[in-house]
Image (cartoon, rainbow, N blue to C red):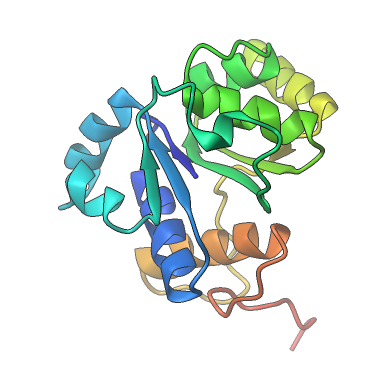
Length: 182
């Protein structure tokens, strides 16, 4: 699990909460900028978010187990994913552990889900997304769906988080599965 400085820190927090509730081991890397966004957007600090993860790694620890393809995982989620991180992933520029772990996830053929947070998107952003997708990443912007008739921000966040976890193959009840028109 990677959390970057893009807006939407709550997505990363909520994924960690869900993984903990599901008793799934998680490895967390938080970019330095994520600490600022977390304080700006939530009542949590980095220590509180780190406490949700099973394992926490410093972004500069390129010797961490998750930096190697021999370390098995279900996959990786970066939520939120900044354009800077997207660019590093798309260009295989593994200058920190977060991007190195993403690169390893791709080279091992595992699911890498990027919850890219930016709007509006210019052509450069779109090209980076295409490039990352061509490498095998799943581009998963946290765009709300409304068929479940959400009434709170938490409902909107949980819908996206539930779908991200389902994309990793983790059954959950955080979102309503489309059942067709009623």
